[in-house]
Image (cartoon, rainbow, N blue to C red; front, side, top):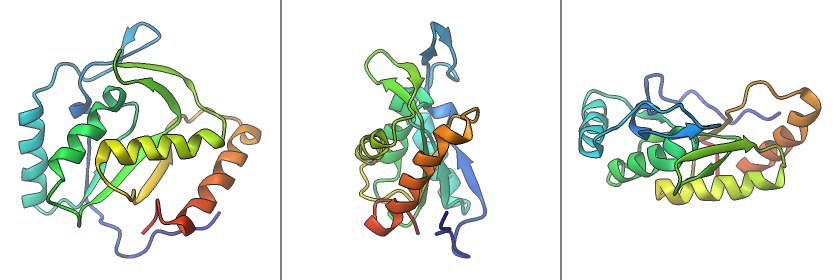
Length: 156
């Protein structure tokens, strides 16, 4: 795999699971709980004011809500680094997570959906959220990820 991270990668970041709000997986609540988007935005802006330049989210957080909220909060901060994760089917209307996504072709669909939610044409780093995938299943996904920086949608 090719590494596209460099020494300009911010070393201090803020995780954004908590701004995702409520969501479920398998009928079980897995979200942080009810959130106030205005409070989340103020927290993100305060983090930026304090020097945070990396924000970590995931499609799964709030079934897309974290990415939308973070994207809105970062509208006037194009210099901020955005990291997100993929790997779970989400229903943004029902606020639910579905099955693990293992089809490498779905990676592009997933990335495009995240970029739309963030309101950005570029994601600095795309991580695979599921951590219990066998190597045979993960390898084609990693191969697809390895091709993406050259296309400009992800990478530094």
